[in-house]
Amino acid sequence: MKHIVVLTGAGMSAESGIKTFRDHNGLWNDYRVEEVATPEAWARNMDLVIDFYNQRRKQLLAVEPNPAHYALARLEERFKVSVVTQNIDDLHERAGSTNVLHLHGELKKVRSSRNPDKVYELEGWELKKGDTCPEGSQLRPHVVWFGEPVPNIVPAAEICSMADMLLIIGTSMNVYPAAGLFAYTPGEIPKYYIDPGARDTDPIPGLHLIADKAGKAVPALVEKLLTGGSA
Ligand code: APR
Image (tube, rainbow, N blue to C red; front, top):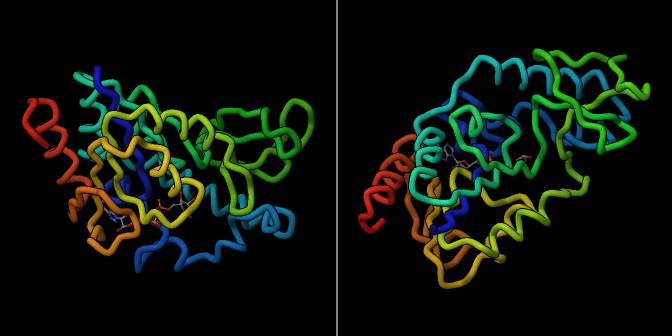
């Protein structure tokens, strides 16, 4: 069975109503990374960081997977599929994808601020200052902040090295180490980049570019792959 590896970013969930980060109306226009998504921000202003992720979580509970998420789940009818996502939402899982690796954490989970291995599901959307794990330390979002290690990059690189086809969807490929995963895929396999901003000048050579929104382009590509037509 052919193994398709799918690397997704914020654009995958844009049509579900979740803002991307670096588009003109993206989240990093409304917030400064240094104030909400670094260990220093957590140390300096825990209330602001907690509120930022509470708002994201509240929104996530109100949105649904879009046609691109559902199409990727259907790929499993005929292929082994590994989704490696930079997204912290759970829309791939809710659409039915069964093999999803989150590089940057998961919004619906929290963890001990002392021991990164103590991870818990959060009921509802609200984490509060004073919410502690059973060992007594403050719970924090289970999210990889800027300046923190990305432990799942190791299994992600391994997965990429075993790909027969690579799909990159809705990511600016600006953030490392995720953007470097491309280098781990075998050189000769077909590679597609679906993103309205995809253009020949992109820093990644050797890609088939599909400059369109995920909600339209992904179902079309999946249909071709499932019916055996050349993609
Ligand atoms: N369909 C497909 N792609 C889209 C769509 C859409 N409907 N709308 C926007 N895009 C594309 C944009 O053209 C852009 O290339 O999604 C991409 C979003 O890029 P970023 O905002 O940089 O998001 P991402 O690449 O996921 O960022 C990586 O940065 O801040 C961190 O941790 C955060 O995981 C995130 C990481």
